[in-house]
Length: 337
Image (cartoon, rainbow, N blue to C red; front, side, top):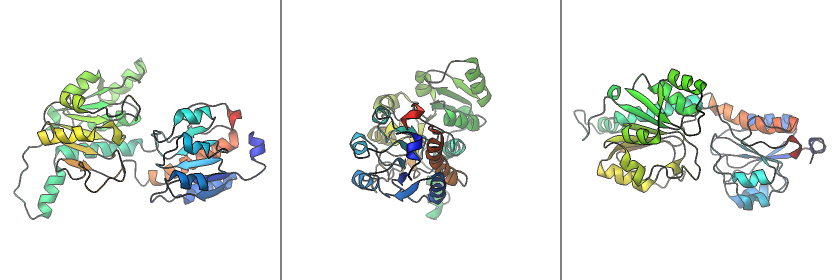
């Protein structure tokens, strides 16, 4: 269907799950661009299929968009995500059907990198333990392990994209050394200069795993990274080290992490993401005294609270106006709209 034939009527844009986000600005942007807008307010595929049966655009939070759901959305031409990650959408099916898929790659780089640093520092300095001790009226108390002096320790980064590099840059004045691994990053003089300016030494995965006292994950969820941190890789980390994850919960094997915490091989873990969100009240990391869990808020700030909503809607509006969204995950011919 051509853009011109689209514009002979008002197409429908549907928001799936909303959580506590205020999408009013996105709705206004879409309506001004020529869309009617509806809220499904659900991650339930049956509800989404019903509410978006005639939708041209789907604006998604955490809902799973698979082939079965796409079968029920024959008019769909674009899926706009409100995140950097896109593992909740079947990419192959979207591409095969000529459906644009967009994400928001850079809006929260600063926030997520800062949150990762905050988690690392809080875990290493054992802040949850000491804060709780004060709340319990205990002042002269110490935990079993003394905090590490970070100026003599190494930070390891798995993933050197925007967030990984920014985290390394923020952390390099605090740690003795920052090293990182990323097989997808081009090996060019420009890359080398950028990493050097950020205070990061690029190396192989073996050195990052085996010598980092704090290890932080900054990679997308793919078949290759699913449970990247498992019993085998965790065992290769130095005894008494810390693991940080602000990327995707499925990057870590929770059972293996808990076993390593209980055995003392890991001194602590700090994560902003879990494999299932929200977690059960008895989730083993939520309840573990050596784990610090925040509720998927690394992206959140006074800037991103509105910018995520705007960029998600703007991708749809740009596609409708020009045939191409602003930040597509894969290319399609503009005529496929």
